[in-house]
Image (cartoon, rainbow, N blue to C red; front, side, top):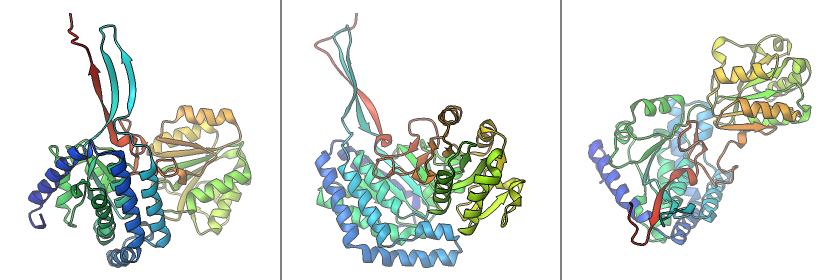
Length: 421
């Protein structure tokens, strides 16, 4: 259906076709899915000039809309980033196929043999902003897990998403899999999002990936189950036993490598005992790198800092801005993170193993790190090939959402004329 004026009819048609495709994908061979993803990777690289040209249209649209530098960075594609898309597609293609894998098996005294086996969820709806690479990541992961997917990208990334989606369709055709397995909503109309949130007969789960506004909207209005990806209000705590070199390396990378991603550090907590030494060195280095440091006393004695306000805590800047404050001990750091964190990713830098264990035990963020940059909070870096997002809820999926998180399970029960007394 090409008519984008009648949004309810358009989305119902997309949903029905996705459901039909999901029934074929549920028993598609591992080989066919690998062929599809490998061919899609080849198509992305062969079409890189066309994709970059399409991306230029989106960048122009984004500039006209007045999007922030961080959002434009998320949107931008070049050959290096497309090489990353290709690598992710190939990585997902090479992963073991989980569909049909036996998770557990046991025999009962009744004579029954019972297996719990992995099965696709069915149809996944992915609603995302800005980052066009999500088109490839979500399409690949859902396909690998045997699911059909309906992709609704941000209005600012429509041309880029269409160009990448065309490559995914080439892969499906090469493997003789239904093209309706990966569908891209062909309109910027926000009514399409509202329709998706209520498509309980066609969509099994919604995965939102974007800012607080988008995720909040999805959580409030969805009647379809949601894997929530909340804000990345990421904290790093520099313990009194932190190594100065590790502290500098970890914090600098966590904040400055890419400021616009959800794993970027947004708040630095410094043990008061090292505030004037390691803490001051780290903060000075950040300022020299162009980061604005919003701090509380005594960190305000460091040249170049500005005073933090109450609204700087629990804030996702997605920009070259970092809030910082001293804490008296690890428990005060934990209390701050509990109050202001989003349950996404939090890190401790310390050489004290007991302090790291205490941090890991007392906090319940989806990802906790010790002496490692929070920019590793990424499915690709976890060995998943790619991710749809970082789920911050506690049911079914948590942390990076990869192929395993996009499956459920069913029980296979075998008897021999068995009856229950």
